[in-house]
Amino acid sequence: MNELLEWNDSLNIGIDEIDNQHKALVVLLNQLHVAIHEKQGTAACIEILDKLVEYTRVHFTVEESLMRILGYPDYAAHLEGHEMLIAQVVELQQKLKSGKANVSFELLHFLRGWLTHHIMETDKAYVPHFIAKGVEQKSSRKSFWKFW
Image (cartoon, rainbow, N blue to C red):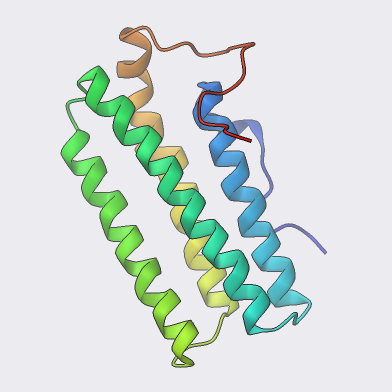
């Protein structure tokens, strides 16, 4: 079975820390795709979706922290986009857990579209500002956000 979203160089924003987080989000999205395709059941899908949401929160926290520290001028708009997505997904999680909705391919395509847009447009917009403020593009050290 093909992946729902295959990582390729066009998804790289050029900052290792953020690219690695985006790759992790793509892996989780593809795990959800497999679970739905293989009909692993709602509980398995909800578990993966919960991981995806939690990791998205971690990723957003890192981005938002960097934006505040580096004085990114479009911080408020980026933050609003993060908050809107989290609200949408939390609402969906609640519907799934209460049995009012099913995990579906429609959900996958929504998440795929959002993640692709988030990386390709929204995140790539802050890269020039981050680089101008001295953020390393490539690093040989361990990512600061990895605690395990």
